[in-house]
Length: 243
Length: 240
Image 1 (cartoon, chains in turn orange, blue):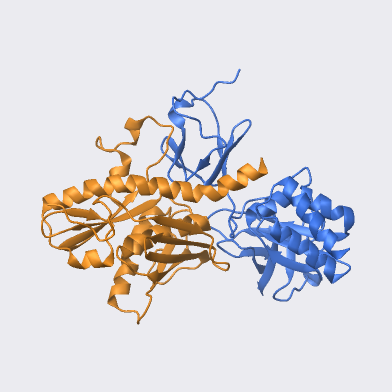
Image 2 (image 1 turned 180 degrees about the vertical axis):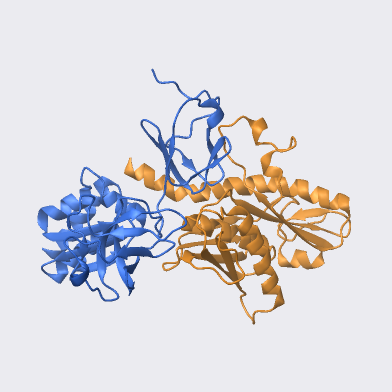
């Protein structure tokens, strides 16, 4: 049973994406990412010498600070910080700069649904801007399940509140490789289908979850293309001018 | 006869790559020694990219990813500008915009013995050479060149220091001389020291020359050679 979305999108359609890098002067890397009206600004400082007491000094450590748009910092923000930290730890190469700390500061500029995926995308772009070594990029997407079992992608805040359950999914980006396709597969599934992070809220059946995964993967491929183009667009304009 | 790597997909050389792209397959390249520079990582038989940038190759066997950042990754034999942060008994702690502080041994100056070791205040700007750099230790610096001569290393007095990206420093140090410095050098006389870590020091007789040179360099971040010349001409016209 179809649901009409207020902004006229189809179930699989994402909101307009915009990404700009190097927006902050003092930060070592920065990026702003917006999906429709949801906008997040991420800044990266580092790597700086020294780790905290509980951290393993043989690896680089990542510290995340989440700043909400209004209000004081509470449990919700701490949870976002923990999720973002775990995701970023899985994409960074932590053995290259041991005993250093990289700080990622995320500032919510506007929240109109799908806030955590937007923040993950912004943080990933900021890490690339700062030159932190990464194993691959992360693309994040939000899928919602309605009461009727209907699945939509990239909800606005209004749509999110009406849904039965939603899941935030983070996938690695699609890579270009010189290797033949088979060697990049793990158990006969392509590399891009691996999940980095999955956070669910609400109640959904296993079938619904697997269906969300499929839809999410298709959208992640589009996001991945967009990310690649926007990351390289500045470099492209430099190289064409220099030539 | 050069044997091209037998890949059916395109070669990545001189292409823009993002982290995660696999650019070389070692199983197809047998009996070769290759050198990997910055931005690349080895994962069993696949060489994958860790930084976004342009994938470069230089004969006979060097591969690296060229990118421009605000922070610096210390490499051996680089000439950088450091700022003294602290003085210890045996070393000066010097900030070179990298992940860790550099250590400059107190005796690493020409003609220095225990009795007349130099004393620098916190905040002194030094032009130094990196002697040892690896990921785990603090980089070791020196104010002498490989043969033990002073060769213009040491503290830089007066002048003005500003920070740029590492890509711009590499462009300023490229040979033949970059068009920007050539055009400026024809009309103005100034001294300049460029550190590969993104710091540039300029000194001239009058402050207006210093400001002009500094502004010209900071504006040329993304300009091509011809555009740099045009920009410099416009700037020089304004002061005459």
